[in-house]
Length: 147
Image 1 (cartoon, rainbow, N blue to C red):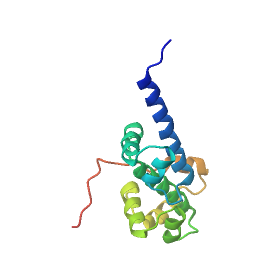
Image 2: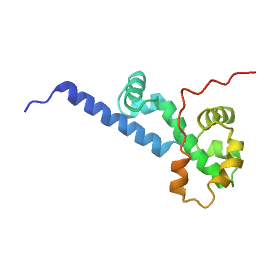
Image 3: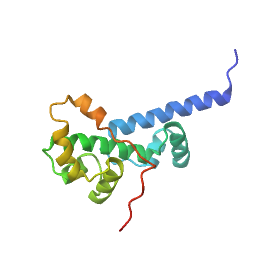
């Protein structure tokens, strides 16, 4: 049985994309950028971005920010850290960018989330709370502009 070289290449690329995704999941709190992620799997940054988006539905940066926001949600539900502390704990370097991305994904500010959702998941096992509060990108949501 002969193997198709194009299929072999696609499978190797997909394995490398999974390694990038796994690295993001593991190292979300570290300063990561697409160039560094691409070097780690011997791809160009542009190729990595295109292939990652085709495979997983969002860019590497978007996936990284989703993981950071997901972790931030868990920390905010605990209620023992300030929003600023949570921002830096999950690897964001800018409170403004963190708050903007958080609001885009979750639909409310980090502070409002901490106040409202900490009580809503009280007594719920962490694995269940994580699943029911997982952020979902909503591309159909109306853009919020200055009023």
